[in-house]
Length: 317
Image (cartoon, rainbow, N blue to C red):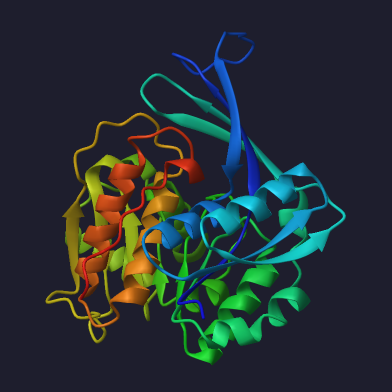
């Protein structure tokens, strides 16, 4: 039985590494590699390598990319529930500069075909788990229905609201017990659903009280974790549900890392967070965030997305 269910995307990543990212119209030399990725798969690998029994629900094409997903899931002990699609397996084009910064273009392929009916057929899997994690690289109506089903089943629901340009609704957000946007995604959600315009570059420097107020407007009934990259994370709880924490809002700093590649660091954070939540349900929420920060920092010290996820489990608690 799995303690974590991850519903989301698998991509075959095509990665070019170069000293600087190419400007429009420029052609530069770089080093090429390919490997597994997709926010959903990255997060499932992180959860599994952080010690949680994990099931990954996705859609795959009948092609080498789909075969790659099945083989790699088996290697990491991930239970795979994959809907067969006539579309090709998803792909990602990733450019990484000499400082580990990246730009990414995604071809959704089979990820866009993950159907509501297939996910609903996995109800028995949901019934055996503690935490469900989803992102927004799959059809939004499928993700919304999945979160609703998980809520009905009694799971803790975690929504990583990525990418920032995905369509969202207040109804979708309300189905999340925990919402985990980064600064860009947080700013986009505030503009779309709260009517507050905040520059993503200013989020990390905003005072805690103001950030907390914005989080409460965005998700009044749930916890918001705004990941801030090298600065760490900001956590905001409802006043009446602080998840074992002593205060309703606070910051946790990032850990120092010998950064090689930041691709997948946010996925590392999310996968580690749900793994910790599932394995230590009685621990204070800050404990889970500290582990997720630690795990994400270690993930940046190796190249790749899914491939960079460390084998590192939280302390028992």
